[in-house]
Length: 358
Ligand SMILES: *Cc1c(COP(=O)(O)O)cnc(C)c1O
Image (cartoon, rainbow, N blue to C red):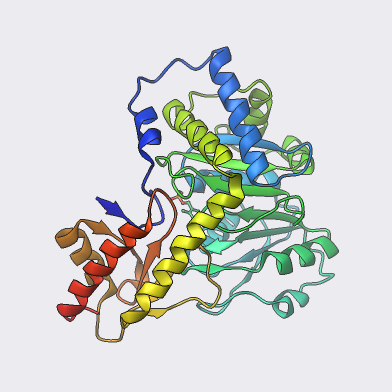
């Protein structure tokens, strides 16, 4: 199997081996130590400020998105939210569900947001900002510096879903005045799905302790309090947390977050160079290193390409849904991949081209 989707992604063999071990009991000093190490390494890779905390929730990335919405905001807030694709839209749906006043900013398909788009909201009394820094569904990486400057000058609490961008694109939480950053296990962390992470500044921690969400499992107060001693309020996905520990340490001893970002970037550039010989168009004007979104020519079906690669070549690319189903597919660059894997993908694309599918 060769998997170029953006999550779950290919795991390294030593990480897979950890997942094959018996699952240990977790109310122990050993597991607490492992969790405190996970927290310290995630904070380090996020370049979080002094006093930051990270909590690990058992639930896919959306659990951390929902927890962020209900723990950092309430009906008294006014939140700006970027809706540039299905993940941005998920934030909008969460804000609607919990009756949190909000205004939606919709960038043009395939395009970044601009300073001018935000300027109109200067001095309007907004208190929060929600963005998926990389809108994975269409492969657009937003200019976090522009968003950060806007939030800083308006004293707005900035929450960034960095799920598919973490370990793929440069990011520095402290420098960018990001109050909370979200990621999850199945993207560049290259572990099985099931664990999501929220890194919080001291201010975000304080806000979570003040807020009163109508939830128990996703109430961050419990996770923060238990996390002080390296524990979780409920039985966590122990096995995945052990895999995350092995993976974080692997990154740490192999040159750290910078080296991992460079590795993903090198693969992205290798793919983008090689794909030029095929009649496919890169759909995004602001690419993340995490994926390359590709448009097929009119009269062809992107979904069909996905099906043929999967069924005839054992290769997974990432299909799109909804209106984009037949127009767009995506190729990921995170996880345990190398140049040789992309050569195999190019050979499969040559076959698909020969069949007249692209
Ligand atoms: C993958 C992803 C998520 C998480 O979705 P889940 O299916 O709940 O794991 C959230 N936001 C972004 C930007 C993502 O890429």
